[in-house]
Amino acid sequence: MQGLPSPALLELKNIEAMYNGIVLAVKGISLAVRQGGCTALLGGNGAGKSTTLKAISGILLAENGEVNSGEIVFGGERISGVVADRIVRRGISHVMEGRRPLSHLTVEQNLVAGGSTLKSGAEARQRIEYVYQTIPRLADLRKRTAGYLSGGEQQMMVIGRGLMSKPKLMLLDEPSLGLAPKITEDIFALLATLRSDGLSLLIVEQNTRAALKIADTAYVMETGRIVMEGSAEEIASNEDVREFYLGLDKEGKRKSFREVKHYRRRKRWLG
Image (cartoon, rainbow, N blue to C red):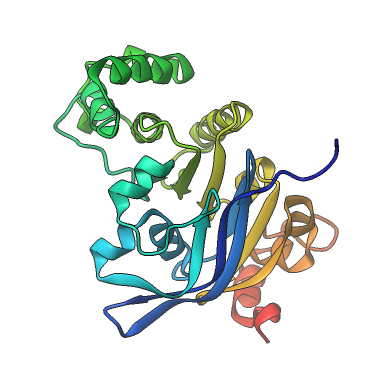
């Protein structure tokens, strides 16, 4: 039947995540990413967005953290508590905040490192060619040392490195961080291409406008909780989001910095 939504590829069901058995960072959140879809997870610093991605990818376990309640389901199978390398093999790739290139290696060596879960050298070479076809700029930079690339080039490279494991779902943490507006446009154009190729995306972003342009669903987090959810269009048109995150008034005019700061202090949806 046409018109039916795609099934959920990833589901978080009322999960709580804690560090060192003491610090509760994520407090009973539920969200979903549909097959072939793009979900945006929005919120300010310290909202719990990065912790949520780390809980999904298994990296949280390496940072003295754990999912202590609820469950994470990917492709119909529970992955809560599964170690990171096995989650990669199941089809989830995590592009972390701050790019984190292997700075002393070349672009191509970074890609090879991203393909460590592939079964053979031949498969890795095929995948590298796929990455070069998808991100042509990397083919031109293949022999360049990663540490000498621009911020935008490094972001393209770590996305390419994330593609090496043949993911079904890519988690991206602040892909526009520290990038100029034009480079941010290029990065989100690349993500739109990947989505059109069938890759599902879960994007954590503080650039709300860019994230909502590519997403079909969105969630807003504050202090470890989901405080708002809906379609990207619904979230983009919500008065609170427009004021708090986009800096716009009811008529769509840009608010002054002082007004936005005042709004940040009152946060109506948490009252």
